[in-house]
Length: 87
Image (cartoon, rainbow, N blue to C red):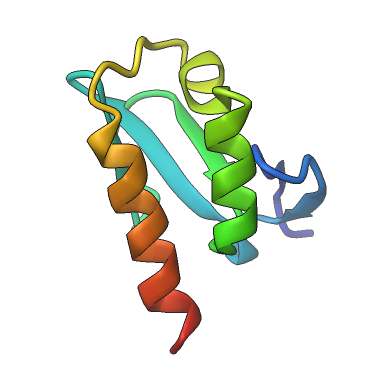
């Protein structure tokens, strides 16, 4: 049985393999493509809509139990999802 996680944006449960893991590093949100970085992780669909919703709800800081001080990384995450949705 495959692990199930909840998307920060749409709050839908989905298999871990269909979600993108992010972690907090020094006040930044970092994409963990290999899902192996240490620390608390959060999961979001790579859909730009889910990322936008999570940003608007300020869900990253709450889920990661960290203060996200560098908001430029959130826009970088949105750009990352835009690039990878095309593939």
